[in-house]
Amino acid sequence: MKLYDAEWAPSPRRVRVYLAEKGIEVERVMVDLRSDEQRGDAYLAINARGAVPALELDDGEVICESAAICRYFEALQPDPPLFGTSPIEIARIESWTRRIENDGYTAVVYAFRNSRDAFKDRAASGKWPPIPQIPELATRGAIMWNAFVEGLDARLGETEWIAGGGYSFADITALVTIDFARATRLAVPEGDGNIARWHAAATARPSAAA
Image 1 (cartoon, rainbow, N blue to C red):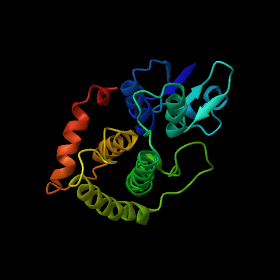
Image 2: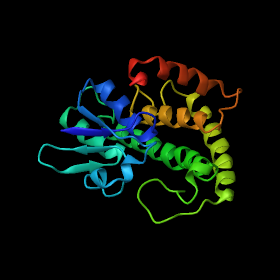
Image 3: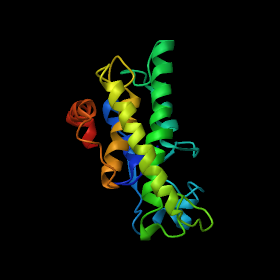
Image 4: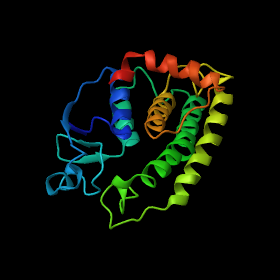
């Protein structure tokens, strides 16, 4: 199988961190986003959405979306578990992962895609007709981000890792999101010490460098 990857994009990084935690090695094919290789005919033949990552299986089937790729590997290799084992663990991890994606990651994408000249008429990732930027969405993203980190900091005042128990896919998702936000100049307020403690611990894991 082959994993179509990109160095600096957050979604491929989420898969890399997950695979590193699991100790799984997969052949990687790098896609150059800076030259728009993901929008070229060769890559579109693999993933018609023109987005990364994508996992091409040995039989030719392609799995897109970072969470779906990680779910696939979790089913192949359950240990160590990163999506939970008991019904309540699975539910907590799923709930926090979705909250981070919908409230945090979405906020960063709004701010990132709607405020940079490089994304003029490309306010959504992937292969779309021209989509104009909406400056108000960048403002919305900043408001959403502040509310998100406030809630996350409160949660991390109650538990070491986001979903309770051990390090999980929810923590991977949050790590990638917060690092992406920093690159977008959406900061975590200095007073949010619980996030700072958690982020230092997550970053210290060898998988964070994947």
